[in-house]
Structures are given as structure tokens and as C-alpha cells.
Amino acid sequence: MADPEKDDLEPEEEEPGTTRGRKHYITRAGAERLHAELLQLLNVERPKVTAEVSAAAAQGDRSENAEYIYGKKRLREIDRRLRFLQRRLDNALIVQPSEQTDTGHVYFGATVVLEDEDGRLATYQIVGPDEIDARGGRISVDSPIGRALLRKGRGDTVTVVRPRGEVELTIMDIRYV
Image (tube, one colour):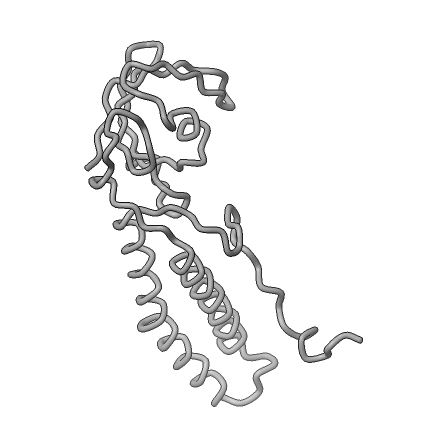
């Protein structure tokens, strides 16, 4: 028999690209950004929204009170994000790229200079899924380029299958900063 109290609760949603309980790599800078977001939500956003919901609830009829309804929805979103951030930080394996001993090959945290078929250079850092910033040059270790580069060395050429077609990339330099 179903528990009626549990039926009223929203199912806990998993954010895209996550696997519950699985350890994942993250750089120290990425972990610090997630921790800062968690503290901002916990110490600033949530108390502010809670105060707004309390003020809206004091106005009376909650069923047609848009501020109250929106505030409660925002609190659920904040709480969901807080649970997600806490889980991600609890399951994170923090990697310090500068501590890598095999600097001749591409591993998590490496900054790689690549040359494409047209001679254009691009620089990327291989990071975890929580740290992706394509414009900032940080790509996921799980991306097609990230997977193709792992364990390759300077001078190696890799073929990457992208939605726009295949491209050959040559590793020009590998740095661990």
C-alpha cells in the first residue's frame, strides 16, 4: 500500500549528466565555485526568499496569493539545487592538475594546445562536467574531444567525431597548471 504522505512530495529529480553516488573528478577551482554557490544559496538566497514567503503568507488567503505561490516554488528550486550541490561535492574527487607526474600525456586537468586541419590553434583545459565553459576554454572530460585526448601525448593526432563531421586534431602542447 502506498504511503499517502510520500505521494504528496515531489520526486527528487536528478540533474542532467549526473549519476547518483558515482565519484567524479573536479578541479579545486571547480569545487570552490560549487561551494561558493552552495553558501550563497544557503546564507543569502534562501533566507531572503523565506522572509518574502512569510510576508506573503501574512497577507491572508494563500490560494490566490501569487507572491506566496511563486515564493514557495522558488524555495523548492533552491532546496533542490542545494541537495544537488551537496551531493556533487560529497561525491567529488578533487584533482590538483599541478600534482600530475606524467606531464607528457593528457589526463584530467591538463591544458592542451591543439592544431586543427587548417592550422588553427585552440587551447582547452580538460575538466569535469560541473566546470564546463566552452568560451572560457574548459571542456568536459566526457566530451568527444576530451575522451579522444585522454592518454595521448605531444605530437599525437586524434580524430574527433562531431555533429559537424570529423576533424583531426594534433596535440601541440600539454601543460598542468
